[in-house]
Length: 236
Image (cartoon, rainbow, N blue to C red; front, top):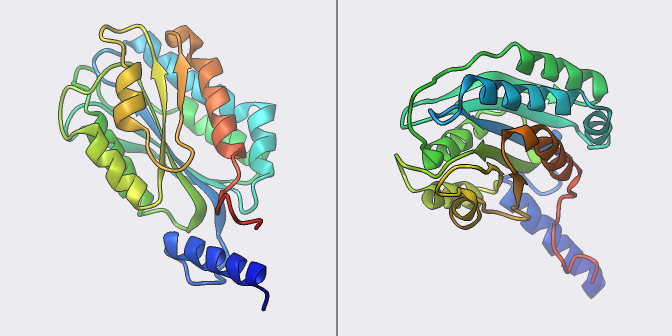
């Protein structure tokens, strides 16, 4: 065996170990995606409707349907809502998306989902920890695992966001964020420095709730289309 082939084999073994899979095991899906939607007290009923409608429109769009169809093994997706401590709920169970039709079915489920809470605090760390726990209940192993958390304010209750994000990232998750600006203090810095974590983590920005639909579409496309990176040295 050449040195190059031996190196690629080591990288493949390391990737399998990092995902908790036996060497040579096939992935049952390409992407596990957990959508965590902010329903804290700062989000009024119109803003909640914008979030849910924007998410539904994104999954019903031609571009997201095409992106999902291109993912080998498809996408396992679920939706949670979060607010203060002990107020996190999985509102839509796991759906397997493989094409535009299944993405539109998920969009329909989003449109009929109500709101779990209205007047409570903002516990970002608890939201990430809850999403991490739900991820452990997914029906299949996936090549990438992403927590997609959106919010319009800074954390004011519960565990530190960075502790929850570090724990999830250590388990193989990427925590991405969509920050909805307009509050004082501006939540952007906190999400950038204390929330996002893991390989390829990023923050998408909505300049207010009216910008949310376009921002969540950009974010989903970036998350779905991102290839799984084994190693920057894999080609050597």
